Length: 282
Image (cartoon, rainbow, N blue to C red):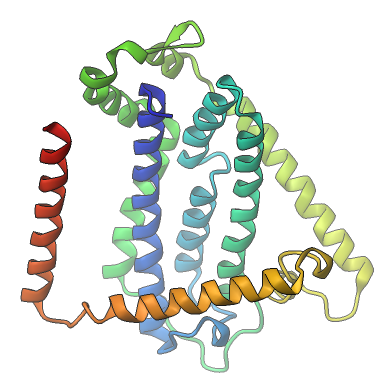
């Protein structure tokens, strides 16, 4: 979507992810600091010991999933609407499905850290030096969730010189759409649907009995039925995973702990961006 609407939506999503990832990095730093454990498989049961961290992680994951009422919902709503307007119905439907699948794998992180039996020695809550920045970032998410035009307006104005001809969408200017859009009804419907699905999930688990728990369902259950995962697909994704780990090991070598190295990397990054922009302008 190389249009005004596409650029505004993309940059709004970037801002949303910046806020969310900042919260998650700070929260996980607090978990590692207090527990001394950096392995997700060995974590769990921290909900009572670190309730504030659990709250911030929950808000961040919900926002990143693109579900209402947080800011990711507005950007994805515009994105899917623009796709549907271009006739890309299948792509829009796939994107909507990916939103719900994203919430599922994000819930795995929350379940692994905070659900389950409490550890024998309960850790303390994360220090204020980590909690206060998270609170500030959550404030930014809340502000932009309620008033998305605070960010969309300046982004739209900055993009105008390059995409002035694409300001009209569905017979209205983009600014008019921002002003008229009332997300509350759509948010309430989506939240009601999510609540019904959660109740259904709980009811099915109760009927199954045994060792079923929400945490076990999230962490142990396979993402797809075995019939939909043929051996070829399994080997393919195992290879992709192994290759990604090897690539990550190579990239990690750049993190030496030396401040001069980081300054050099930042300088090379900005020089690369400047060279790319100069090439495009030429």
